[in-house]
Length: 161
Image (cartoon, rainbow, N blue to C red; front, side, top):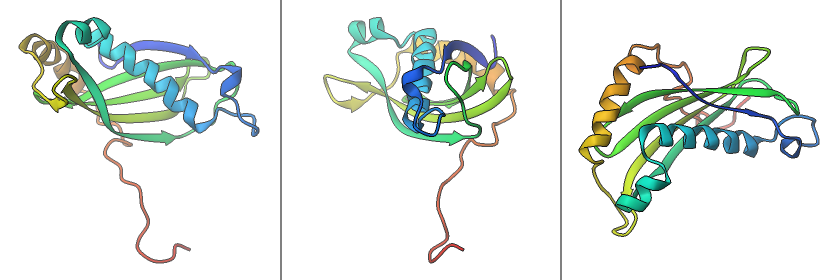
């Protein structure tokens, strides 16, 4: 199994650029969402899965780290690492690279829940999908944990100087 996975490439679109001349915050998340859709399709959780089972994955938490700015037309490459899973959850880490200059521009850590939409409740994934995750995970577990994974945001109580 490939680790990390490389399932999406894109280009910074002109409409994603702000008045500072670089990619707007929200569009980083849009680009990462395309990488997520590539991962979900790879794992068998795409639109056909929803139609067949009535179940899907919902994002319940996400952390976005901006590391370097990106300009219009920058070629993007995404890598994805499966950090962990259990019967109802999936923990994923994406990296966004400037493909031609080869620098890490941003990271996105996500936690998903497997949800039955009709029942509006979290349910275990089917055995065949858990087996697919079991196939993918060992190669990803052998990778170094990304330094941005599991970070918290905040200040000490009181005034920051």
